[in-house]
Image 1 (cartoon, helix red, strand yellow):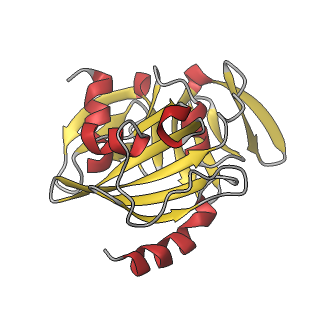
Image 2 (tube, helix red, strand yellow):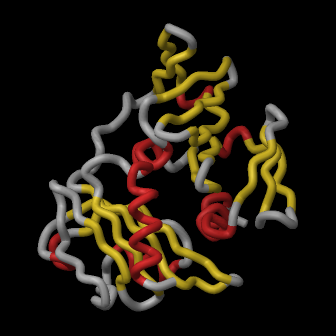
Length: 216
């Protein structure tokens, strides 16, 4: 995919990223697109090689999504970032990286507050079955009901405790405590059968991190 094509796609996609977020796209060895935000700029240039120790390099090397803090040794300023590898026929061909000026403010330690109709309900983390992206908002499916959170899936992923929640698809985060079965699937790598009988795919981008999190 050439730089012009990537730039066009990212112009369309940027509305789905949290505000004040820089976005970088790379192939397996260099960056091919970079859009800084007003609050953080790593001064990456198209054609520049990927630096050792960067979150992009980690995602390409480990072949799964990486969300972490990077100190100033790499780009001169500290930052938080999330990088997701891009696959083509089981080979990692690049990565999309979102860069934050600071770690997002944490959500309340034990609850998500969701809106249903004209009311708000605090839902304990332990009651959340899965989260599904719906545009700029997130549908929260809980054991006790369904509602919406104002943050998008990427923002919530960065904040939710990773001992219970894991992203398995660009549109889904699941609570691993509500997984009933893991099945092979021809349309994705795995198919999760949740305890409420919802079927959720695990796509290739997230397979490695998913297997590692569930120790199999």
